[in-house]
Image (cartoon, rainbow, N blue to C red):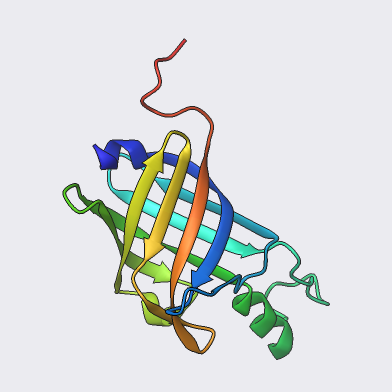
Length: 152
């Protein structure tokens, strides 16, 4: 079952936008950091960001300048909540409880999922990003052994 296949931690491999005309781009660049976690109880969290974000001038996280904050936020996506799976359509729904992007808090984001061994592909529905509508395709690699793998 898909829900069982999802449980665990995943490392981001790539993220690309697919435009309606088939063109592809990388809105967060190609040097990314990211983790996605699903637990067996239905909780999830995701963090992804550009690897090359500039450090803030101040070591105090609450003393950033407006342009530093904007650059950091524009280069990342972070949210958490719960998830459910439609096994028939293989759609994972993320019910977002909290998000760095406040507009997503309280929303449900749907992802079409494909698990192939230790690789997970999540495809969004068309969404507005960077001023145009596109489908985001995120590729993840499992971190550590699969929870279904026999213990040794």
